[in-house]
Length: 400
Image (tube, rainbow, N blue to C red; front, top):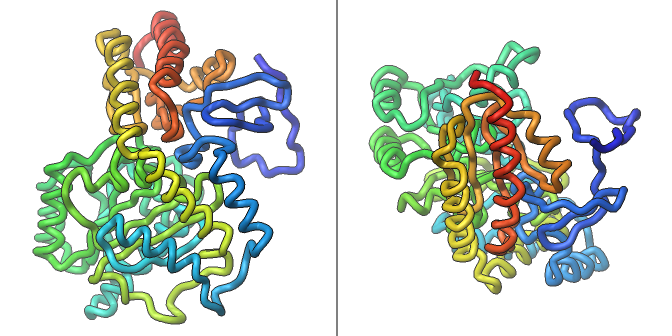
């Protein structure tokens, strides 16, 4: 057990582990006491290229020397460059830049409401999902499907209709009974909710229903996008295209960034004065996004994430799949959840003590989100560290 790190002047909004990380390289990080860890979390799917990437670091240093920030009073050529890269890879048309996934999701909700107002719907409603997570602002926490996130912040924002994931009949019932719905908003793979994928046939059916009803399909790819599943965007596995797609996390490889990518139905909903941001689209963040995409393509990280993700998934299934107490191992690419039949929060500290960084989400799900540069050998290290921890934990506890 490591000694607690004191942070007395910082608000106590996080249940932090008692280590402080000082530096990293590749998929390894070191704490201030010199201990080394294998990073299987990558800052919660943020450090796409790992730490200290030899191409990214000099590019960001170059940009810092030129310009870090200028406001949106002026043209920002790097915004256009990154927008073009995202449009080309998504098949969509236009992009709004902001600073985080929460901000991107907030912008998406504003688009859904304005889209309704433009159609004469004064009290627009958005379909959202059980176990969803879209952020912690008042609007995005209201869209989130977790009572723990809601608690203490009531009254919640109105205008949301909640349905279960992968239940097309529930969505069809909404279509038949809620005339003010303007959009369907879901994560392609729920991250905080427990690594719960929307099934391919469900996504295809939702796309068809949105087309029939004239609704916007808004797919939150904040955590599962930017190559994490082996395609640029997780919905591409289903062969569909959304109307609105919030992005963040991995797009900047550690530099704060958010984006809302829109197709023709949504691209012109927000007009000058409808939305904005001081820091969004700043040159440093845009350069980080441009370089991330370029490096991913140079190093063929989409195919790599798919290949190593399958390797890691198969190894976990082989070692844990038949173990009593393991409910399911799921996910896609390098976004993997191991659901146990009991709360397993204690594994966070045990993993740290064993030299592994990971996440526990939805109380019972071990979440792995390593950098897309991770090798098969490093994935095997994750398995070698994690499997004994899971087996020991299950042997000493009972199911909930």
